[in-house]
Length: 357
Image (cartoon, rainbow, N blue to C red):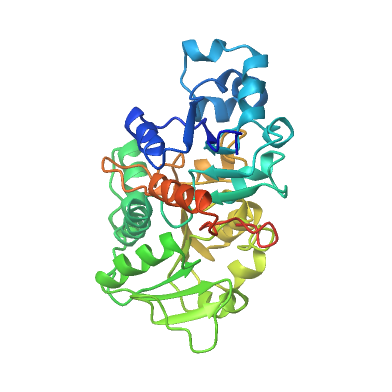
């Protein structure tokens, strides 16, 4: 807190002017510092080209010309910061006064790339408050893509010849989907899939004795019981956070435990799936198909070419959360948490470094 009692809040996320004013209106004690676009020159130098192409404008904006010393001064003065991905990798070492950082994206694993991870700074994310419904729609669309044989249409178009028997359309009603991670995304997946007649089972990291299953879920298990659920599931929707526990969760053993011909859909993080094991599962037919909105190393480069070339694999560039209607409530959480911070109350959605989210 500054001597006059104000709290300096540095905005480095590319939010709208209206959102910026909303932050300022939280309390008279809030002093908003507009740092939007001012750190993008750093990102262009310090982040992989694939990340730069994905998240930054093609052309540098006028605010990128801010001298390094001025950027250092902005960070050094900040008590609170609102950011996104990418961000200054050395943010903690340059922001000596920083006490709280809010990341607008839901995935805490993004922060592994910088010195905030595991630091003494309180970090919050928008976990469970992003565009979870569009992501759930993506999962349902991917399920229908394979159930109705749409993945056969592309090779038929290339050959200009139909292979009718290859389509093998199936009825969705009565099929089972296993939702790996029944958080915000997973719960929306469960509701949509249950609404079209599917049976939904799923996991959470921990399940207390007698804990009721979320809406639409017929069977809830802790993550150590995942393999038992995989054996009865036609589809597997990966919706969990990337942590030390979940990295490589969908490995050879998990794939071997799946129902033969199961389809895997990943809207979480690519590193949760062992892609070598996935390729092997596709080669043997143990895996019938995959829809990957994320893939291993997506911030560094292109997907594995073997997966990308496989007609049974649908890969999209991390767009499942994008939509024409913004349902993201990360700014609402930030403003609510800012009020809590000013009142000395505990913040919501604090990242636990031990659990990884």
